[in-house]
Image (cartoon, rainbow, N blue to C red; front, side):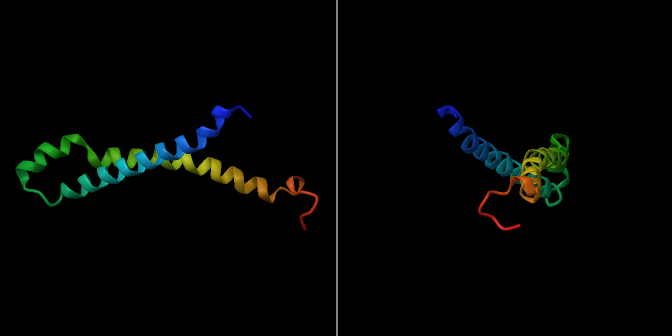
Length: 87
């Protein structure tokens, strides 16, 4: 395996962490819309914090769920068991 491929997983994890922090920030801003005055609300609503928060959450779920489910299905496959493992 090439040496550069060793950095793919850590880079992906840092990107996911950044996306999750940004999604949390957007969710926090979306919750603030309910607590501010009517004048401030008029300026914040067009920024669509809630919608962007939900879309980013779907992207994060889409990036994390397929690899996790692929790993789970590989473990349950009897043909992938090693010689020293019990059935």
